[in-house]
Length: 274
Image 1 (tube, rainbow, N blue to C red):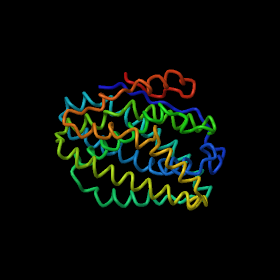
Image 2: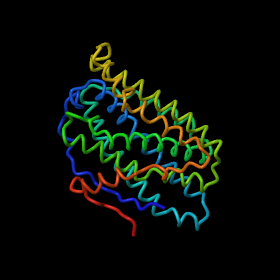
Image 3: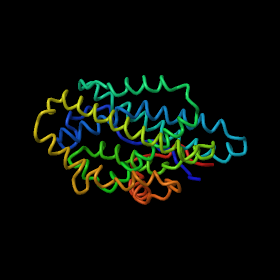
Image 4: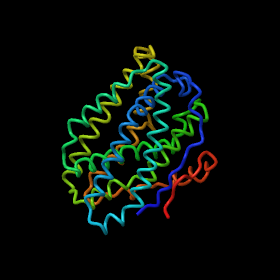
């Protein structure tokens, strides 16, 4: 079990930021914006799924998971709130969140499915975000040239994603989820998540007027497929989820713990295990 602390981030998102806020780089800004556009609806889904999964467990097992699920929900609720504020700035800049509408329709169409499907989908997404989170903490240059408040936002989110990477997975195992469906949902989530983010990134670049600029796609190539690119350097971690003996805690989360220790002046603790 993992002790999860709920933190309130001490940054101001009421002040507008530049359209190309990520170091003036059109692609990096559009890509991170697309991720943020996915978070509020995604975080709500994760909270609902894990809480629903918890309720199906026998009382003794519910008590065993209760504190960790409460911390998971608290962290995800904080992420949802802060990215809603970030996305409000994007709306003011004229960006349209088509990703959220598409995801809402997909969630509505699948709402009737077995709770194990939803928890498995949550566990799969949490693995993808944990991979991204650790990569971010190892490569803060991905935010080079950004305002300090925005660097803090993304690295704090990354640290907490790494911190709670095993919660949904453990609940899925506890409610009787099997390996076959875990892999099916992981492949499905990988496809839909990257499809959604790619489409929204392209939409953002179109809105920014940078879609057909060579510099945009040169930056995309480096960021995604360079020597330390987010895709090229993380294939092994993606494949690790396919192993039958996989568990999220097999991954190194030391960067997360170190960032939270080094940056504790950036947040206040609002909830922690009793």
